[in-house]
Length: 138
View 1 (cartoon, rainbow, N blue to C red):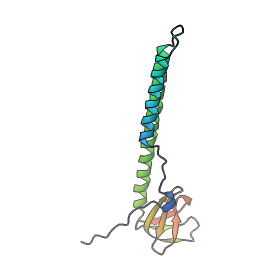
View 2: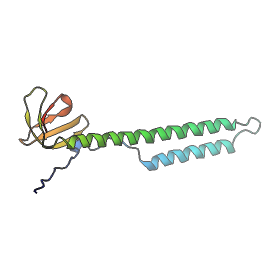
View 3: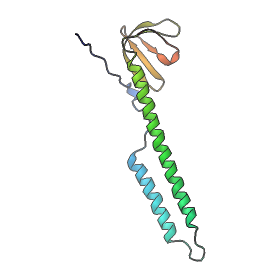
View 4: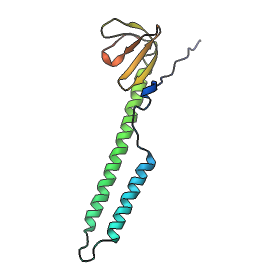
């Protein structure tokens, strides 16, 4: 049984950073800075007019909630990207046609870009799949 190789799915040059990520060290630094500020506020509060500790706990809980939402969004974005890559790989070997029918051919490889999946055909032409392209056969 002969097994053919499958070309890799590679992001194109200017689109390699599809997901903008914040450095994890910056997130930790921001969280630490918030805690340092909170402790400094507690240490330096006016003894004649003390702040309500519930207010500080509320701020801490809000900050923690926002941090968790950011992490959740990052995980969902990564999951969506993996799903898109998985669907793109399934196009390799399929016959596709552009929306207007002017370009048709067998997909040799695929490229993930900011605008979606681009099918690179065996004849060298490309079809942007997000523009209403059709899959004629798999």
